[in-house]
Image (tube, rainbow, N blue to C red; front, side, top):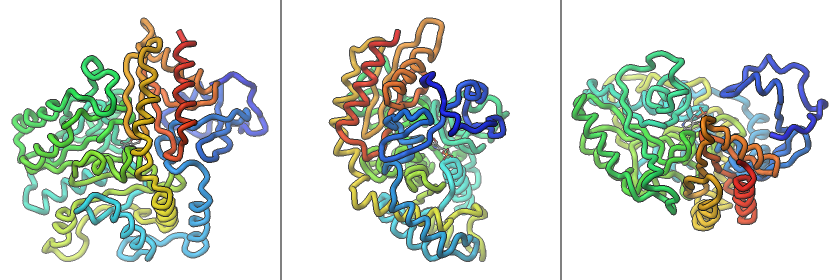
Length: 445
Ligand SMILES: Cc1ncc(COP(=O)(O)O)c(C=O)c1O
């Protein structure tokens, strides 16, 4: 962030009422940083400084900022019905929207539960998995398996299966009965891979050890991000996800892909499941689903799961779970308009068309000062720097600041500088993005 003077006409007088999420609040109070305008791939801050939004907000503004079609759909829905809940009633738009949404999902996943965020989607997925086994008379399946370095939102369920220590350690024992697969980051063997890393498929076999330890009949679900995002952009080794699928099927364990980041076009398909040709039993999404305009999340389930619940003997409610805003009509209107955009602009496949170009550009970082790895796929990437002696994360932070001042806002995660731009980004902007990181690497000690 630059130290330019702040335009106080745009800055609130009082900064301590709002407790900022995942932020160094006290640092912010010393040097506030406000975004005051967003258009296309660009943000403007309160100093009038324009930057390329190279992370699409928080991996969520997939169609670029300010889409009048979405704004109009939201306004029209507000005019008509501002809110109708979906507890034994609903709004027709919700059904029309979900019917259209599931047509993009992997074959055999024709049903979707709606939420308001990624965290709610993950907790919903875990609860569906537990209840599914109970309904089928396999109530012993209560254990959950996540993965080291995984991020699954901030609910207690998602935190339980997540694997980033800092996010967990202040919050007690979390849910009982969780295990973690090893993470798949292996810079030594896979540095600068072009696309998926060649080594590490065998790490999926750790599930056998967990099944052996606890008994597979006690395990409900395995949840992984197909590509870990907040853990630092970690790509699945070739064959890894397929192997995980085979093992889950073998042991009767449900496989959940948390696609809150990888969904909605990020990897060049509607879901990474489709991109990588591996179909899980449950997929979570959020973020890009509404282009981040209105909170919305989704949990896609296999037909088998849905039909299992719909054929329960007991009358009445099949799943005692849901949110006041599961199926909020205004969010669904935003989602519907986002589908219009994705379909008419081929946004689900755009990252695939740009994949080779993206990798060419990202891999230009190889050989630049202090760069120890580049991980890239679809329109997601990370450039990993070696840490400064005794100063973890200082170099990546300085690189991030340098890029911001030069007009490119990337995200710093650990020692990596991470990219996930709007899917509407042009080739010129991609070149600018990596030119700027190269410039930063050369000018930062
Ligand atoms: C993979 C994954 N799952 C879940 C979440 C949580 O989403 P939210 O912040 O919308 O609750 C995130 C957020 O970044 C995520 O990356």
